[in-house]
Length: 263
Ligand code: G
Ligand code: G
Ligand code: MN
Ligand code: NA
Image 1 (cartoon, helix red, strand yellow):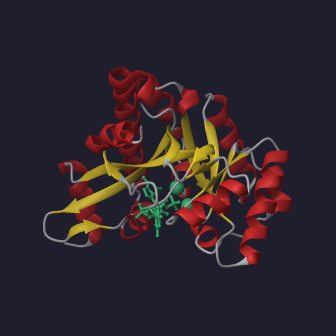
Image 2 (tube, helix red, strand yellow; image 1 turned 120 degrees about the horizontal axis):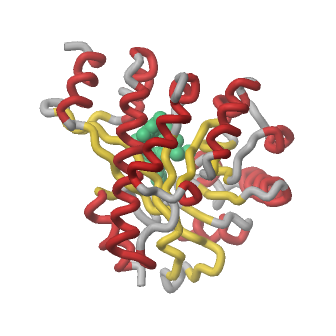
């Protein structure tokens, strides 16, 4: 069948699942010794294991879900799954569990009437502390209009925090950061991947960190693949980092083991 009916079936039959990529604390890290703050957090990322096609990348089905109205169910599934998993880590691992959970939000979710109530409901049933949840929105989404911005404020009123994802790739700029009710700026990997080869990208990251911090926001460098990149973004002041250098996205069952191995 077409991808839409396949996706509908996948949601019903439990073919979607969530993986978790560690987000680490960089400041105070000793990258030579491999010392990082490994329990800083995780980002939840949805996956689809199709019985015949194998793993279908999110880029091939998130847009479809948005267009055909399945994004609400998909988004609720990811948020509920991740929140329940996070609370379970906290209960079993205590101090050693991830301390923050980041979940990606799509444009269409924010437009759905009643969606903020659904988030409140998921927080309640999972027992997730709102302060430990961060929702990630993209620049284009956050900058969109007053309606979207007031929706973001409603979310923040639940006690959770917001991150601006893929920063640097969209239309908004450092000059408009102060307009957005976000707590964290996630610097896109297209900048991070060139931090060790391009002076220009270094300067842009440094400026982003400085502006974000002056607005009371913290920063995450995404897509760190080498120690040199990790070292540089740390020197440029990024509080946190994420990328294959630290860990690829992990199955839920592998997160605790990964954390324990970081010493
Ligand atoms: O995990 P991966 O790198 O393949 O993700 C590709 C894209 O899909 C990224 O832009 C990521 O933000 C997005 N994505 C992954 N999981 C989710 C999700 O649960 N919801 C939404 N809206 N986007 C997601
Ligand atoms: O748009 P967003 O930042 O949510 O996308 C996250 C995506 O980036 C996920 O699909 C994840 O698999 C991918 N990713 C995470 N770390 C790295 C990395 O170090 N290099 C590359 N190329 N992709 C990464
Ligand atoms: Mn993200
Ligand atoms: Na990103």
